Image 1 (cartoon, rainbow, N blue to C red):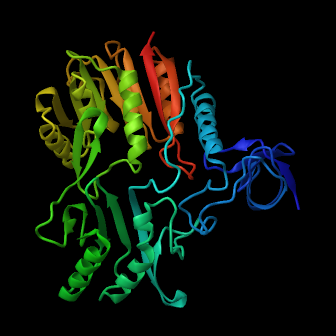
Image 2: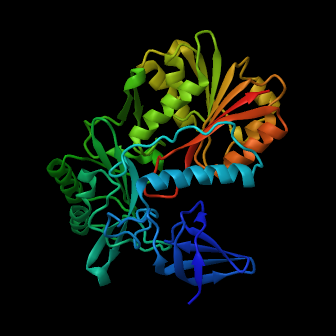
Image 3: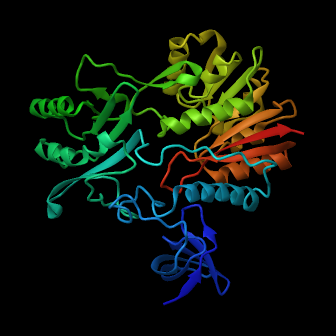
Length: 432
């Protein structure tokens, strides 16, 4: 069996090695280890492989906490010491900036990290009727598979939600449509936990009674989604259609619906906002754009610091939510929100926002290439860029530095998704 010495971890948490000049990516292997491996995909310049045996073990290897690790596809790094996970993500960010963008940060910010377990306040879990496995399965998908993992607990979900996995199996089995309910969405607010059942066929009156009884017994709110996102509603007609999360440092409370985009890790989101505000340094009298603003997660802290914020977002529903949240927090006079497709940004569309002193950019995984290419000579001198994809951040950084005259003053990671290879980061760009 072939052997390799692992050099580093790649962006998916796989061990990287070179054997006779060929790149080998080995699942489950850690830097510094000597391992035996078995390849399952071979190409001319690389191979993908699974770990067969560890011949020399890394000091950062730990025993995975979850008994489903390796089968469930929800986590990929539970075998790595928590501190080593954070360090590996910082290296992934640095490697992406250099190898993709050919840029380096002048300063590496201290990593942002928090609780390692039970952090996930949002999740979509699959539901499937599998008679061969005894009935209904409820959980994440198996690794590299469309099958649902046979789970009875989950270490990254809040403990009270993890304890619901087995009771949810029995609940779904008792309903009239156990084979027509592919998904349950979990959304945690500061006031309650919501379970949204994606029902492809209508619930009967008996189904609704069972769902409500389950919610009462377990202290969770039961919702349904019979169609698109606009059909999401609570089963109890007297229940509010909004959840809430708070940002105590800024004396803010933000309303959201269970299917709205919000960050999955409340603690890291608060720390990331603190870092963003420190780098952005909003001042009274400034006009600051929050691009890809969502429901106001960064916009309202900017306004609370005294600046006037211009939030821009492609979703009209989220823009409406941002406006409502501004009003809820008494910040309507310091904020305005606009609907615009930022992936098709032009110099003219950015100029239409008016004079702006600074930008905060928080795009989805696709990045903000349309925005950075549309920047002109009178663009703000300071840009804070929050990224959930190091590759697109690196691509956009190259444009900002090589074409638009900015410097990458600093960059660092936020461990938004512990136990996974996902890398969240934040970077500061300033005009030379």
